[in-house]
Amino acid sequence: MNDDTKPNAGNDTIFTTPLDKHARFSFDEEVVACFPDMIRRSVPGYGQMLAMLPIFAKRHLSFGQINESGKKISRIYDLGCSLGAVSFALADKFDADDIEIRAIDISAPMIERAKSVLGEHYPNHDIRFVLADVCEIEFEPCDMIVLNLTLQFLPPDVRLSLLQKCHDALNEGGILILTEKTHLVDEQDDAWQVERYYDFKRANGYSELEISGKRNALENVLITDTLDVHHERLAQAGFDRSLTWFRFLNFVSMIAFKQ
Image (tube, rainbow, N blue to C red; front, top):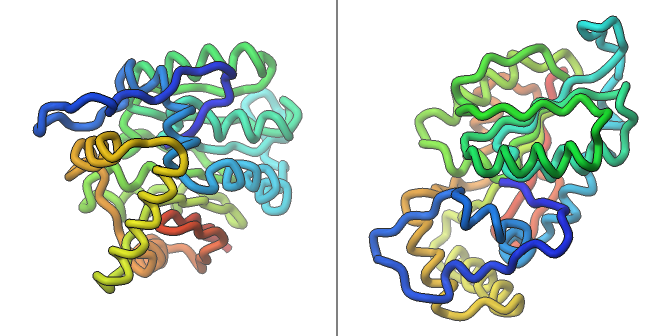
């Protein structure tokens, strides 16, 4: 899921006290209140990944579509938008008459907060927030789709069908950005990478209790794939090619092309 750019957001203290062992992570009001801090301290390289989105858009989008009002514009989907960081990153670099954004999330608290923040900062941009399951929406033709830390929260058996819908919705020349937490096939290598990730979290101020608490809460909620599985699935979905453009420990971001 995405970050937020709202200053003075709350600190992530959700796992500073022991939780019931059966408690599961959810994107509720408590998470919304501290989500920017959580992402900043938990996802290495997230700011750099966001900063590249408008660069990719400027390179690959034609801005030649004709929308309902007769304007030339490019439509972008942000699936699993959370607090709207993708929309923020794109709106900050494009004029209101260049792009329209469709931001989808299943969490009502996330959508409500995102609407407020983006409405305040970019009132003239066409950014529509939709409370819905990303697997159930009907896509309009589009030029760019972003899945930032979203696919990993969906059941594995629906991931391919969602990517197929994304491929079919994209216009020729369109791109899909897929950012995910992954794991390695080799158990020893994967264990080393995971422990370095925990070192990253420790360096950002998380305690052992917080690290173990969140790990337990995410069990069977966040289900990772290997990088090879991601690329194979993108090919199965119909994308002509895909490549990994960013990697930091067990977090990767890929770009897939519809030619």
